[in-house]
Image (cartoon, rainbow, N blue to C red; front, side):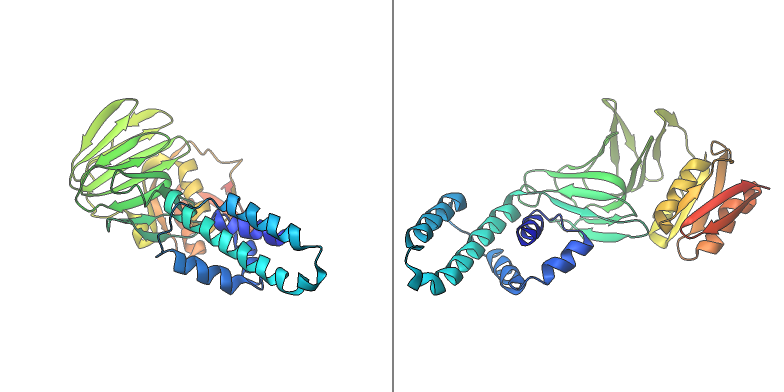
Length: 300
């Protein structure tokens, strides 16, 4: 049963790191992955795996009484099951969405089917469909990502809060709890929020915090700071700073005795936790203590 669950999760691209290690230890791991790879370049005719597998089961059942054939039936069934699984893999890979996720303190880059590039910040994920990409360049996003979009048809970044529409440009989208921000770095960006569209030119920003539109000064940098392993804030509530710190360092911050609604201007690096802590506490006269993976903030 454990083996079947691992294979099912592998087909659904849902294995966590622990399960992936267990899957790689399966005795037929090499056969599964090899057949999967070969089938990526194979276009099969219409094939109903459930019908064919049922036919195989009938054949096996009919020959079970003949014990002399048990020796070769077992490996035959195994090979047939692997083939059925791999046909399923083929259809999965041509119809299902592709999901890319990052964990806390992790970043990654993805090249989309049209050579557009997405840089994904910590604790974020995107979803897109390779097969339907020529019909619609749509990406679902939760978290934060920087996009370099190749010229072509309309490109949509769909978030829970709003949709960003472009044709070919560079921009950053950040969608977290009660926070939605789009910054245009190149080209022209259209942001649809509550059925109204706002167009952004290079340097323009669109920021919503707790449902309110926040005015921002012109952006002078050419890329978001997080691509250079830094987080910068300009007059933003301290709770947003804490949340980003937790994502970048995979820690828990206890801020019960701190006013987290106060505004903070400054930043922190993603490379040194001690330096980063000083950067977000000293300007507000806050002290801190560390216990294992928890940081407790206190007013001086």
